[in-house]
Image (cartoon, rainbow, N blue to C red; front, side, top):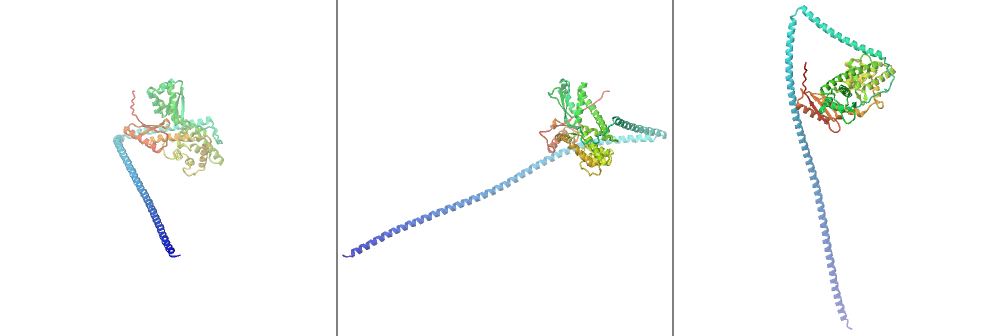
Length: 513
């Protein structure tokens, strides 16, 4: 057989297989190239998206930082604006205050000018009086020796009569005190360590009446009588539906007692009108003053304390109508005096001096003069004026550690004062703070120029202020009311509101004889 055809066929097969293999390989390579290109394009898209996302994040971050910075700047600008507004308000307030001060200074200048004119008038009157005195002296100088002797004798005789009358009165007062002391034969209980009697002061009193018809007479036409009673006594009369009773309300027991006794006398007499009310209140006030003096004398006699000045005896009597943290001041002082005498006797010290210091340790609380001194120092000052011993003075002034203790009885008085105040049920803090608030209200009003009287009524919700009509005009009265209200708002703590009423009254009185 001829092999050539087979060789040719094999070669043709090889050629055909190689062409097919080439075509297949070329197709495979083309597909791989397309895949690689596609993957490259996809990777490029991913990188592009990633870069865009990073750019957006960076943009948002920068935007946020810019926003924060802008917000911070805006807050700083707002703070500066607020500060400028506050400064503007402060400047406006200061300007208003300056205007008010200028107006007050102007009014004060006008007042000073008026006083200056009054002083000039008084100076002229004084010069006139001096001229008359000089004229009288010249007339006396022209007198004869005998006439001058007669004139001098009459003058000396008049002075001697006055001095003798005073000495007689002092002797009579001392004799009455000694007679009462000898008659009563008081035995002082010096071993008593805790007093059995004590008093808690109330702020109201109940006045009983026979029938409700009397209430109308007490009130008067259009309330004239009751307003006159409140103005004269400084207390509040509560006339309500309570049968056969009128409530008298006031934190000051002296005023309350004067009001009760005055009302009793008016109801008993039957003549109730403003003029009669003023007369009865004045008489009752004098009666209470006499009772205060008698109470002081009885206390001194009962305790066996001799040779005490009348001024101190009067202050001791006033203790009856005062309280300290709800504890009656007179009972407290008597209790301290007895405790001091007992302790001094146990230690071998002067019992009379200790008892004297114990009784007088709180007299600064009942002083008539207004002072910013502590009551211990004020009491020491008053006792010094009355001629008390140095050891007693030191005990009075040092019982609250205001000064150094130099006397042996000083710590005794301090300890006994603490014992009396610490006794269970002796003191009541709430009432004392209420009373102190009412007193502070009245003292704020009394510090204003031209104010004569002030009364806190309606449980401290109203303050009545009486002013001198000659010293205070209508404009000054409004200014006083405003100043008092401002001081109350700035210096005190109180519930609700306080109404300040300034009353300016002019009276013309004539007597027909």
